[in-house]
Length: 510
Image (cartoon, rainbow, N blue to C red; front, side, top):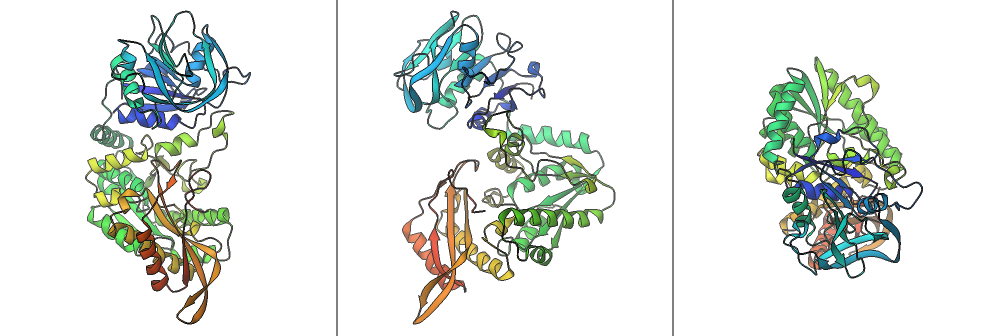
């Protein structure tokens, strides 16, 4: 990891995308708030300044200390980052006459400029700012323009410092990855050594040194993250890893038995604990979404702690924390990330557990976890599983939870998910599931009136769950699935399909 990139975050919604694109180039990178003291600049081969919702002209605008960066380390400013460089080093930034958002095209690209090598005039880029650079500093050279933005790209003479007012990290910037590659690989000379195989090798060695002969306990969920974490730890410490798989009664149909069988086939040291009755008893009568989440989280910790205490001399708790969990739990002061959701994997343990925490995946994005899993030889079907929420069906049953409601939703979900697989649609969907609504509707079956439950089917496409679009499933598939559910699941007489995107909706309903 000697060749790595530092990304300073100013609160942009796109900062994680920058990191994902850099990682796609097989280059290791880390994100820190611009005002963090938790990094050493000298450890990095290049620095990228992110965008921001702030204006550089505002009194409370972020102001990073670039004294050890600019002119010393290759530097790229993106949007706000470019405007910060211009504004504070001799140029001028002003409010744009027109809000510059959305698609634009490069109308000028400087000839023989390595930054734009392989990129021609007309290339589409993505703008997202209301300020614009009016005047470049005297020691700057203009290297790129769009029809509406003259100073779209510049570099500082006699320095490896560049600025662009568009976002190369977003999908709509068609040559964005090539631009990042030109800067990082050809200009900054950053080595492309970040691969799944290299991650496995270095992580296993690090875990061996960190854990020695200590015993580690891990709560498996059946999902990708905890599974990959378990296999990595197993390679490092073998049978000193003790895995616990808790059935909270809110899993999918037959999931407890199927996943246990799959884990045993992988050679993991796993104990299955069926605590479904305990969870359902504690949840009885609770209909508030947050109330349900807290109960499920509390009871899981209690069950997990009971089981961990049956093991002697356990010193570590392993968790499947991934990089977005870490990033989103650190706020950029005053920025849009100031109101952050809490993550169950970040924020420590109850005092009574007294265990040290080890997180083998905390530097990986979700897609990287899957690639590492493939490198470890984990079954492709398991790695391709859709994300499933920690509280399980507890947040897909709107209102209070009963054993009968769980049965209904398990049956509905099984028909939907199995149908997607049979139709060859499962791997084209990022996440799919069903919701049970707390309402009954009138129906007719045969000559009789029914008054039964309505269920919602949901399927979305996404890369990381931060944004998501609903999937346009074929009408024929929806029709067939609806018929199967209504005819096969007692208690349901109506099926609807959710066509909401995130934002403004969320993927789960609670």
